[in-house]
Image (cartoon, rainbow, N blue to C red; front, side):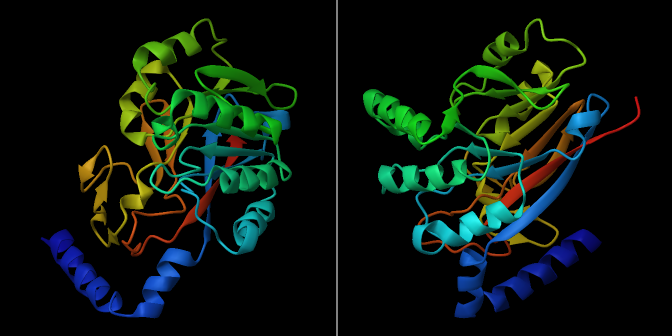
Length: 277
């Protein structure tokens, strides 16, 4: 009862706030930087404090000329690694050159890796191949069912799958014959495959797609997310599923013509920390 009452009061307060045009503008345009700590006994020495900054669901949106506000905030996170978890462009209003320009500027901040979102996968096959090749040419590395080893000294594996490839069989192939002490970090656009990630034995997943649930209400969280429907489970922040932790970015864009409420656009930085075994 208390939770329901709090939710209703929160909804009433939110309804009053949305009548304010400045509030709506601020909620949809003012960038936030969110920080999370990921702890694992597999982390030690050179990787202590390693910073991974995540960009998700930009959908060709601009935050200032040349996306300077987004780039400045990203650079201020002092990332050791940048990851783009899909929907850099938008299938309804595509501007591939703008997406490439932003990607090129991001790649100058830190080593940058990318996985497709559902919007990129709507491209015609050859057009997608050209786009991925262009990303490589500006310094961004696409991962499509691949794994690379990164880090200093005792490193970690970075894995990436297309948003329509997040299935148990693919992840199991990527995870075969891995050393049990090696940390595995997965980039995958869609958070609602969480149980597949857990069963595959991934340590940390970075995902987006849910747009934070679009409208967030106290006591309820996000109201709707693609692939999850009303009152979705995975919309923002850290989730633990057995030995797997999933971090979901609220992303940078929203649904067309629908403002974000209590859900400002964000970039996420995950800081790696060790813990005693």
